[in-house]
Length: 319
Image (cartoon, rainbow, N blue to C red; front, side, top):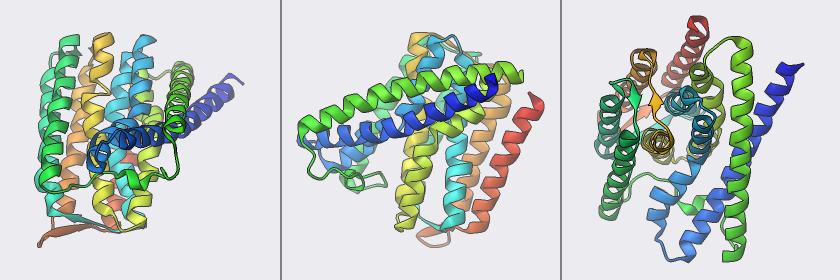
């Protein structure tokens, strides 16, 4: 009976996260536009940050509940899900054409941030100082992305992809606040249900964060990517995944670390972080083409999806 209640609580929490995130994004995008912020900056910063709010709030709530393992699992697990699950399923449905500019300009930044994160985690913890360094890296990274976008637009979610027509500033503010409140409620419920399920199954908070929680908080990215590839905007889908993974490493880990240091177990480095790096390298190899673009065909999407399933099974078998 209690398991059913916990599962129901997580489902309700995930619904709140998705629903609240949608309202939060619309409110933020409309407010930013009416304040005179240009469309491409909104896409690179405001919308990208808002779509990562479920992960951020879940990780913050987990740390406040003394479950740092879930915070780390949520961040790394979401990155793994974004590549293997989100892009894998998207490619299975619609083969994705990837232009070389994505690989030349956005992917190197992602690898640099991954190296930075490895250096900070290598001593077994992410301290408050480390959290500050990650947030500094976030500021520098997105300042650089904005600079690149001024030279030539890069793949990022545009506010035009969000229904912002005929929304007043007052309505936008209401949506922003309502979305934030619902997000916070959803995060609290998800963490509560997740901790209970972890205790009942006898697995760690880290494993729950890497699996169930990461899957739930990646639902907005899955929906956005499928919508993008259906419209033939493969670059937008990949660009948003890269942006989300960047935020997950610098913000979803950086902000909770400012609240309390995060303990990093050895398994995080040799299993979860390493698998995230392998998937990222594999994605690059899959996207490389002979001309100015490559194609992630359906069979490549199947490979990514199967790897995701194998990883999930391995986590529970080895837990």
